[in-house]
Amino acid sequence: MASKRVAVVGLGMAVAPHAQSLQSLGDRVEVVGCYSGSADRRMAFADRFHLPVTNDLDALFADDGIDALFLLTPPTTHLDLVRRAAQAGKHVLLEKPLEATLDRSRAVVEAMEDAGLTLAVMFQHRFRPVAQRLAGLLAEGRLGALLMASASIHWWRPDSYFAQPGRGMKARDGGGVLLTQGIHTLDLFVSLTGLPQEVMSYAVTSPLRRIDTEDIVSASARFPGGAIGAIEATTVAYPGFAETIVLAGEHGTARLASNHLHVALKDGTIIEDGSADAGGGGGADPMAFSHEPHQALITDFLDAIDEKRPAVTNGREALKVHALIDTMLRAAEAGRHLPVPQA
Image (cartoon, rainbow, N blue to C red; front, side, top):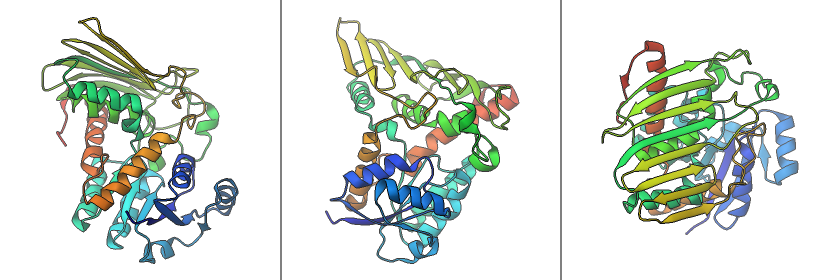
């Protein structure tokens, strides 16, 4: 497989695991340039990762030799940048979320589809080994029909996290704990259970922060097969705990807590995988996790380009969690159950 020439746009907090992955994939990629409008960020990035930096964004789009762009900018910038990338004939790996709204997210996906280009979204939780082990057990039918499903995201973010200008504000982030923090766990949840058929939820902003997005959400869900479940997400749970997915089926129950999987089957089988001590980014340091799932997702993205197939976390897959989040927020505002669009 030929090496791909790639460029990175955006050198904020999310860039570190991308850069570490690109360094590890030196036999698959050549990093042509890494862009930020901030001279300080360019200098800090170059000093840490020893990758080429640039202040010329237009040149990256104009360079016909660049195969793919890694777009790591705030959500509200994604649609314009993806449209430019599609027009320039470049594949895109996009930092989550797709965009700030469901409509704009659909437009992102359609822009890449219309251009016949590969799009992957950084939902790296799907590539955690324990998550893939659980997905395999479900595919084999080991748990039987799903009866109950829950996702609990009890995280903590300190005042310093929200001190960055625009953090937690709709104008910059597009959303709060669901779209910005909990979306990774919710994407994994949906990939394991399928989309709920309908949800009812509460969504509020705590008095801890001066933000205009939600930081506490509680929801109930009903699935097409008859299973019911619950979703909780917050960043006010000091000091932060491992996000947890519990799936109860006819034959047993699986509990996935960040990087640790425990499965108990009625035939007496016990399956343990992963480590309960592995970091997940649920506490004060949101980047306290391994870059290896990022690297696995990027590898799939490169393989998808070569094999001319959709990436595992392609745009249509990414739209599912956006449909769920959008419905949860609308249900909280409406004060009633709402159907989830089956993206």
